[in-house]
Length: 494
Ligand code: NAD
Image (cartoon, rainbow, N blue to C red; front, side, top):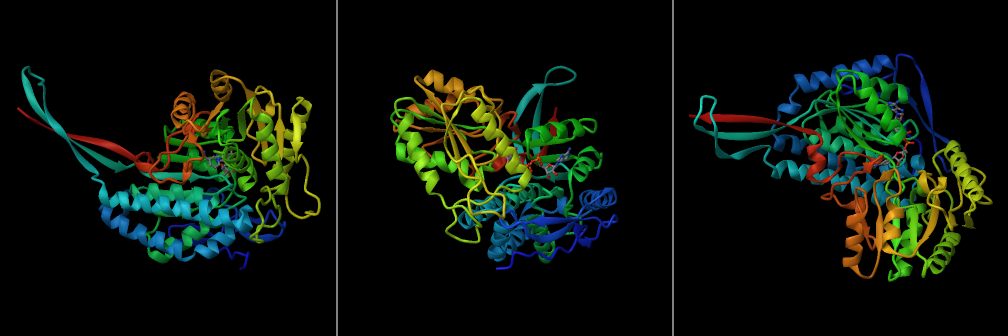
């Protein structure tokens, strides 16, 4: 397996382009700190060129005018082309994002391809011009007329897809797949930490003959993102990242009134009831702050545990956390890799100090692991006796830090869970599933997993947040609808 990647340039209008500025950025393997690629930093001139290409492809090209079935055929080739490169892409995800091998193959790679296939199948099955039943309506000159309508689902235009670093292949593909399935054209701007998977998607798009300008990839930093979100040639912004940047994007996109979709951060709650299967709840609790080293938007990092079982829960999670194998995930036995950069680890360390200052009890972790001097590693860290108003219970740490808060009554558990500015995921563990369902209904969040349900792995289930966790939904039919607008055509008969 080679962890080096030969970047051919920015991908614009089916050409590989070098940046006019000549500026290049190093991509670092967070487990070894080695440079694995250098990629161009896009600037104003490349943004202009990509916008012209995407606009031309949308306004005059074949893509939005093709039948959904014809588009599905081309997208199936893109899907299959990506599948053929599975091993290489998974290795890249391990090297670039620090994912463990099991996670790279499943959640990082297989899940978005499954979502992609779902959208392709939907294109074939779904009727994009739906008749609405005939009804008698008041006529302009009195009396009644018969009115018949057709709802036509049309693409919106040029989409700017801007993504975060933590699940690079997944996040990029779940923007590209529905945006293109709907007939839009897209300019994808991946995170500067993890730009390589977006470039692989472009390579395969070129190979399978996607028409010019339909998919463009601009590597670069916030300057590129800002240019895309302010330019009148962009019709829609689909963003995945932090709430802070999400708010900026909303403001940046306001003067040109773009359609926006925001998939943002979270601090989701995992409620563990007194009657829960405690071993299963503790396993889920551990996964929720250690998978991808805790760098996951939907992770339920705030465990709210019934006081009668809290001590046992904490002991079980801490025992499992101490046994986890950390290291370079090229070793398949490694269970947790590094944080993305030293700055992210420093941020985690600041939060851990804040937890100690708040009087919370550090149960395990709270330091860099011994013997791993290269790479941005941090031990799985658990705090007990946490006050829900403290910073470590309220802020998205985005690192391997879990907090535990006790409760006595359901009312209290729901109140604590909902006392958050975020509302993305959440979980309830109880042997009484009906009871868990009743609690799930009362949680102010975009999704709840009962006893460890599949969550974001399901292509049919819409995913997204409320409050500061976002606007809009991904996956499922609703996920495709985000990239479509409705035109109503009506026929009146006197
Ligand atoms: P980030 O918000 O710092 O950056 C995300 C992207 O926005 C990057 O590509 C960045 O270059 C770009 N950007 C930054 N400033 C911009 C601006 N002013 N205008 C336009 N683009 C700009 O996020 P991150 O640190 O890469 O990722 C972590 C965050 O992403 C966490 O908050 C996490 O919860 C969230 N996230 C959410 C989901 C979800 O589906 N809800 C999934 C993954 C990650």
